[in-house]
Length: 374
Image (cartoon, rainbow, N blue to C red; front, side, top):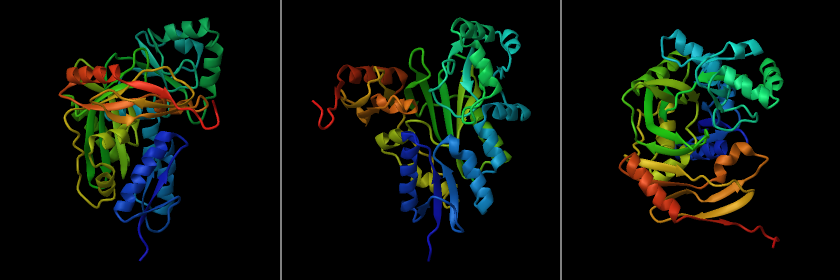
């Protein structure tokens, strides 16, 4: 009898291929094959990157595979559409705008804003204004003008890249980022992870993640996930990132794959995720929540980026997560693999930071010599 199968869609990034490996191993454990395109026995098309989510939904529709509708996937992967959708459902959003003209910047938001692309997520931008924080829309305009970038920004906004979209200005809230990660299956929404993230100084790169941390208002993120399930999201990861203002959460980003560093955290914590998650998405088993040890802290070390390969020897007490480093300046979207990452078991933020600093104090980075070079 021919086996059932799943289709996994990737991009060239290391992160995307890591997720493919994890889901492929889970499929084999469940007795499923992995194909590059759907056939009559395909049970799911899973995007291993947000950039492939709409492709996955279109393939599901074309081949009669249970999955998200293209409309739902399109809305979930466009921040501006997702914000409009939440507003239409009475769910909280921060102030935002999509400036198209100089007048839009002059008359725009008068509070601190962060500039981010409509499509995709992360901390890397090909454009110098991306992921920067300014005191207001006018302050952004002044910065662009001083740096000779104003016309370039306005030209870009009129004709944006298809894989990036226009840049949005969103109200900036200086808060840690709270993550609530869900599985949307045929039977409903199941939360599998909650955590808090803190960024590197003056950067949008994640420095610390405390898994197992919960927020009193995390029910809001569950409402967001249920709203997207009602819209047509199916058999998918749905990861909501929020910031907190006066104790209430506001959704700022949405991912349709597990978060960055999540695969490493799963391995380091010794918990099962991908196999029970895939079984839930396919309707084979009820939800099995991944229970990270409370607490489990993941730390990315801040170090100068150096082209080539390096190896890391971590200090005592570390659970190594990324000790073989690779940095290729031509692939800046993979810069997350150029910095050391480790984990520690802890009892909360203060204990996490104390243990992490002790590890860093004893950590050594060594350059790897390439064969044939002296």
